[in-house]
Image (cartoon, rainbow, N blue to C red; front, side, top):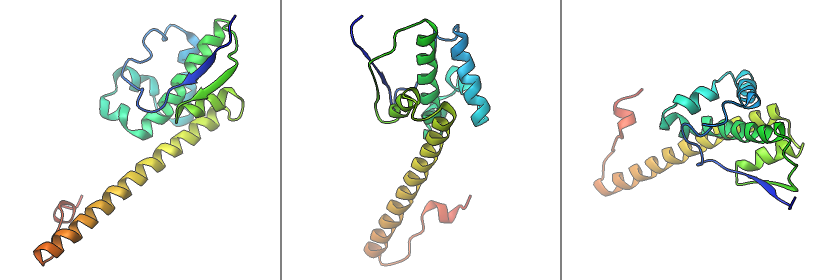
Length: 156
């Protein structure tokens, strides 16, 4: 057999139904159950019935993509597929490669990408908040008085 590599996809590759055709592999379903037990979240349900907002939320996407990559690779192994000569990943996909390279176990990988997703969401929210504050300051200088943004008028 010729040499080949497994390259795992990153965030942005997720879509509802992306595991269609893999549900008949017991190892795929078992992998999603394992991830669900660890994270206390039904990722399989998210793939099958989740809406785009849920799928695209980085706190869901990151564990979902790691789990999907692990599940597909385990399905390959269950079919006695030969081991690739190289494992790689695009951005988030690197974590899936690290799991199969033996650098991280699956649970540790899930915890790392879950935290990664939470931190990315926090950073984005902080960035947006800072941009709003900066824009507010510019507008206040232009109009010469205090300007309140929607969050101040209608606190949640």
